Length: 233
Image (cartoon, rainbow, N blue to C red; front, side, top):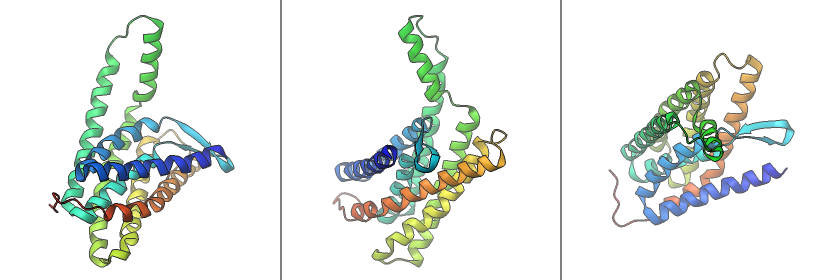
C-alpha cells in the first residue's frame, strides 16, 4: 500500500509545484513547466512500480498528465494560439533533449570504475530503443494538438466558468486515449502479446485519466491567478 499512498502524495506535489511555477512566473512558468515535464516524464518512464492488486505501472504518467493541465490552462486563459505554441515548445524540447543525450552517450567514458558505472546508468535512462522514443514523440505530437482542438470546441459549447471541468476532462479523456493508443501501438509493436498489450494499454490509460480528474481543482485555482502584464495572444 506504500506505493499507492506515496503515489497520491507524488501527484499532489506535482500539481502544487505547477501552481507555484505559474504563480511566480506567469505564462512563462507554464512554458518552462512543459519543457521540464516532457523531459522528466520520459526519464521516469524507465522505472516501474507495483500497485495494489498486482498492477504494475510505469512512472511518468503523473508528470505527463501535468502537460495536459498546462495546455488546458493556456487555452482557458490565453487562447488556442498560446496552447498550440506550448505544444510546439514541448515537442522541440523533447526532440532536442533526445538528440543531445543520444550524442552524449556516444562519447567514450573514462576507464575508471565510477565513470563506467555512471555511463551504464546514463545508457539505462537515456538509451531507450528508437521504437519507444518514436512512440513517445508521435503520441505527444498528435494527442497534444488534439487536446487543444477539442478543448477549444468544448469552450464554445460549454463556455460557463463553472463548466471548466467539462472542458478539461472532456478534452483529456479523448486525447489521452489517443495518446495511449499511439504510444502502446508503436512502442510495443511486435514485443507484447495481445492480452498483455491490452492490459498495459488499459492500466496506462486509467492512470492518466485519474491524474486528469485529480488535476481539475488545481486548474480552477490557477484560473484565478491574475497578471497585469499578460494578455491573450
